[in-house]
Image (cartoon, rainbow, N blue to C red):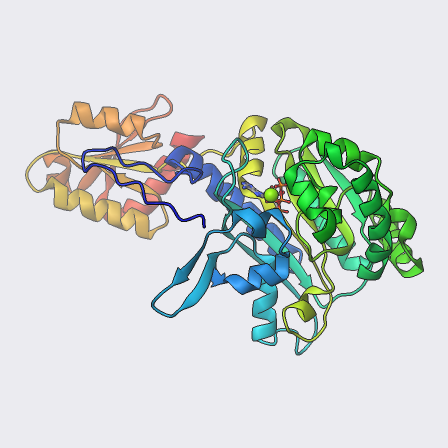
Length: 436
Ligand code: ATP
Ligand code: MG
């Protein structure tokens, strides 16, 4: 068994985040927020509607959906036994299984097909490295109940349109068709023969999968195994007429939309549920972990999870890899600066400053109210460092006159008095001058 004693630290030991799970600090969190807002808006614009699933599911769901002889199920899942309810549970390693489970459980397709999206953390016990973490974020889109290549094309074209919106270029598309289960069965015998003939060059994973899941061997990241995979018989020559027609339909729609692709006959993807279309979006700027988005069709999954048979197709994109690309692109959005930083000094000025900040926030302005005391000089330094456009100054003078002094911080300009009674209108005018 894999069970080992827990590491127990002395009370004095420094506490750190769990390996492979990252804090996102404020500067980068601002970029994430901008990224998420854009992606979520884009998903809705393409007609996909949000669905939210739990982070924890019954382990059986993933074993059945993803497949036993896959990296995820064999070695990457965070699974445990919940003794309180005698249940075997798992932190979700991906979203498609949960999404289809939810669609079956709530009979979501009762009145027709559905386009759905979700976003959030996924968990896989991998070796942490650049672009590969144990907690990572994905956005997923799933088109449920559509059988034709039109939604395959839609899922791909929508990604093609997203990259430039994110300020990214150089993300290329690889495409393949892995046919139907019957076609893969025909190919399988010849593939096994080829792998057996080259068994000496295979690693332990590949040797184990040779019988259980030989197609998965083509997905190996081990260069020696890849060499064997490169000479393996191609699935493409086993595709029947219906599979070829589906693939041709997709290629035609992509061409019409002006989306370029390369056919990668060895692209099979890491999960078992796929059939027909599989695709990956890859950046060469990320090193070994270059796939930013992967997806395909999974027409067998509904039945496999005990639902009424229904078609499905979708993709999942890795947010950390995309955020890294945006960071490197130089087009990273910056955090919104506060419109005002409110300074105060003297008897009764804090209450007054509170009400000023309150009124401006109610009018929609981001406002920072100085906290922690100190003189005007040191407060002004903090106002400057905050990035605010305008410093609003409240001293005993201003309090007596029922006014506020306003000073532009990002350009030369005179300090002016604003009347408390016309605060919102006069501040808006001051802000305009300070930003123009
Ligand atoms: P890989 O071949 O890189 O292991 P995968 O086939 O396991 O990828 P999918 O399950 O298809 O990946 O997940 C879709 C996307 O999610 C990937 O293309 C990648 O961008 C991202 N992703 C997958 N695993 C991780 C991880 N451990 N850390 C960060 N991002 C990940
Ligand atoms: Mg993986």
